[in-house]
Amino acid sequence: AQKITQTQPGMFVQEKEAVTLDCTYDTSDQSYGLFWYKQPSSGEMIFLIYQGSYDEQNATEGRYSLNFQKARKSANLVISASQLGDSAMYFCAMREVNDYKLSFGAGTTVTVRA
Amino acid sequence: ETGVTQTPRHLVMGMTNKKSLKCEQHLGHNAMYWYKQSAKKPLELMFVYNFKEQTENNSVPSRFSPECPNSSHLFLHLHTLQPEDSALYLCASSHTLGGDQPQHFGDGTRLSIL
Image (cartoon, rainbow over all chains, first blue to last red; front, side, top):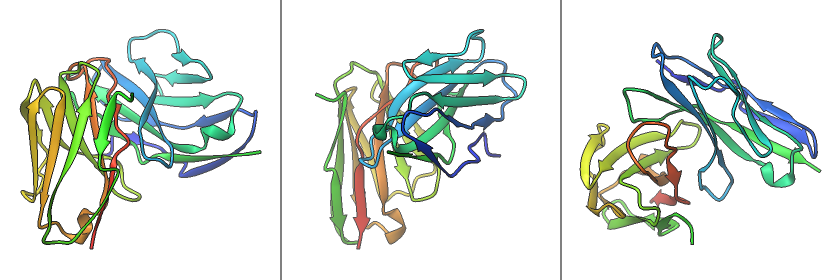
């Protein structure tokens, strides 16, 4: 069964605006971690932000914030004040506490327009 | 200097060739991973090494042969590959297996099988 679902294959956003990327996950574990990665066309996967299932506050890292809704099993990434360099593929991933493997979603392509 | 370096960046080979992909990490991590990323598919974990010992072989065909001589280096030896093996191969490392530690990725090797 698919553990990570990203329903938006592609999105366009105007420069300087905010964009929200959806991610829902499926797990029966109480303890898990959620990660977001950015992959530009060059190929490298860049770690952006982490949210632990027991973290009470939403994670933030510069212009990235994670809207974590545990009951809904969603971990949406918000990118504020979009820049042209934010154009890339974005992947949501999860690791359950008893597993070291990361399960990745299919990704969302973000294109920032000037 | 980037944390995880992969060479070559691009590789074109025939089905009867033998080649190797190299990954080196300068982060002092103990775990290293090989992933395969095909078009329109989520990342597929191939192999995991922890302190040089292989802990995961995710049903990968024997035409892919990993080697981990030390915690800083990881190789993927290729022989008699098939056209469906054309993909982006990503190496990653993490301080430990599991926990809240993110995996750090290299730029990947784009492999094309003729």
